[in-house]
Amino acid sequence: MTVKRTKTILHMDGDAFFVGVEVAKNPKLRGKSVVTGEERGIVSALSYEAKAIGVVRGMPIFKVKKDFPNVIILPGDYASYVKYSGMMFDIVRRYADDVEEYSIDECFADLTGLERTLKMTYKEIAERIKKEINDELDLSISIGLAPTKVLAKVASKYVKPNGLTIIEKDNTKEFLVGTPIEKIWGIGPKTSESLKIKGIKTAQDFIDKDIDWIKRNYSKPIEVLWRELRGEYLMEIDPNPKTEYSSIQKTQSFHPATNDKVFLLSQLSKNIEGACAKARYYHLIPKKVSFFLKSQNFQFSACSIKLHTPSNSPEIINSLVEKKFTEVYKRTILYRTTGVTLEELIPDSVAQGDLFGSNAVSDKFSVIHKQIDALEERFGKNMVYLASSNNARNNKKKGTESDDLDRDLLFL
DNA sequence: TCTGGGGTCCTAGGACCC
DNA sequence: TCTGGGGTCCTAGGACCC
Figure 1 (tube, rainbow, N blue to C red):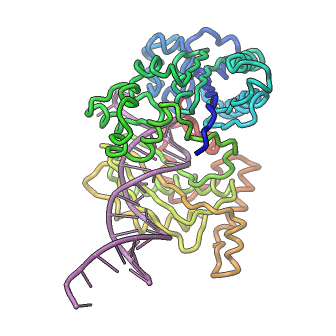
Figure 2: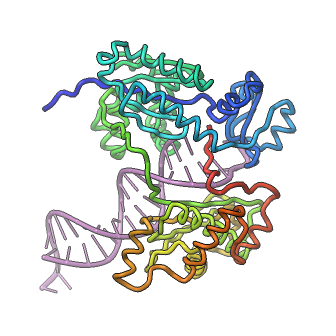
Figure 3: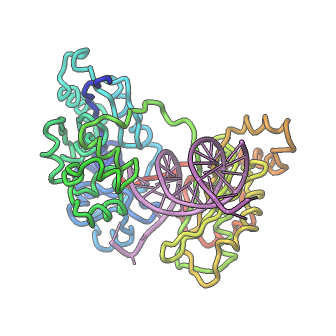
């Protein structure tokens, strides 16, 4: 049995990242109550000043305007966020080789051993990273150092904003007694409810249970969390950048909820168009498609379809979805959201390869879409769309639609 | 928080095989 | 013949994340 040396894992987390970038772009905003998300109609990110006066994530923009007239409301600028994100991670890479970009404003890095090669303590390395991001990018971040990823996440959240927290193997208790179990990365609402019923309220309560009890009551991922919280390094840093999607999804909610079949189908059609456009942009073709309806009460009903011949033409997918629609639709239910997911994506070069084996993979539509995509590249998006989506497009609220590919915004 | 959009991963259970 | 044990593969759906 090999004894693994204790690791030092860094977790870096942007402070109110989207707003932070807006302030970096325009320093006049510093110290003010600022939110982003105007284009979406709900607050995506908010400055600490906005938070202090009572604005919360997800709050409708109209409510912000009404109740907090002094708050500055900005549309999201995803391109800038991506740019700053990359520059932030590059600064971390000045010190660490193994950096995992976990999300737009978060990364993990393995600092193990750098103490010696850089002749600095781990704390000094973290301080340097913080200072350089501060000085060069005008951004504030929080850092956690710990022997595992899960503990590093606890640490980076422990002091925020602009925090630096170090958790060591023998002082975890200090940090875990005060951490509610639902705050642990990987423990969601379902698991935390189940744990609470069993009397477990804090992360410390959780790791005080013995392993057999955990195994008896929970699944593998929960066991991994238990071990990581006890300082056992299991979740590895994965420095490989995500190259490809394994699924592409488009969903859209609407108000009021409805059981109008034609409307729902047109919503689906619009989502299919969007998802297919994204797939074509990344040269991917799905072998499977699933779609769902979400009811007013947030009940899902879904259906998935295996594509005999993979295709990213919306016409093809549309007609398949239409055929299956009645399997998920009930006249008596009012729906609030429709969505479609393209799954089992393969590069279109591979799909083209299949062409020679069996019957035609590329349908007559794929040629047309190539040309439309090229046109839209020159003259702008949403120039051309399917008649079947028309209903959905005319019904959309004015001016809410922005660049499709740039709209994968998160809450931060 | 009467709740937005886009992802990933795991698991239970059925189908099928020997 | 009336029934054992074990394996793989696939799928739907749950749970979680930012």
